[in-house]
Image 1 (cartoon, rainbow, N blue to C red):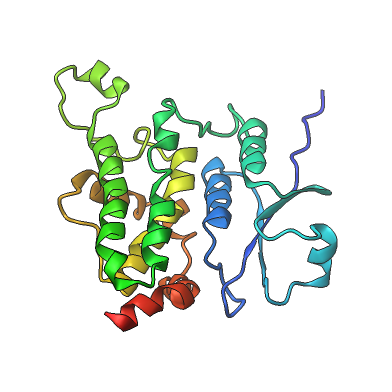
Image 2: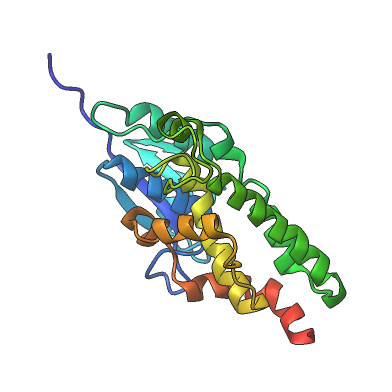
Length: 243
């Protein structure tokens, strides 16, 4: 029986402002990371959203990157693309990236929403309350990262603190591909526009980020810090100027 032919994969991601690199888009980075971690052969094409090429208008009319071309088929929904890749690029040839614990997928879901409220606020008087609410979401994530998961307790029943590298264990998963691009934006933007750094006492979160930045599928798919800051300049600069 002939071996099934592998699909041709082309990922279209948002281009940087100079159209030379990868732009600020956590959804683009999410899919980039998944394909990299899968070890699949794929092409990455950047899309200048200010001056989209004519061929892209024909490929995915009305859509913004990221989108994925699979042979001649175009997929534009990020969640469905993730499901497709997990189902299609499956063991034994490709690693499984799904999580063992559903909490790993949901633990950081409030962070980006509260970060957005915090960083887009233009009223200095509201800043302390919004910062406190945002910080609470980081604390919640930190607690999860410091708490041993069931598999860790199976190995060490008396463990009181987790030593795992990532959200769901010692390997990057779909949960990390979703959360890490957002955390990178949070870290970069908060430092520049609010002089807010992730507190040192959030040891689990610090360990998580330190480990993640050592991994090429995350570090090498991150947009340039300047690109991120420029993307937030119009919404984050007002509070900075008034303080």
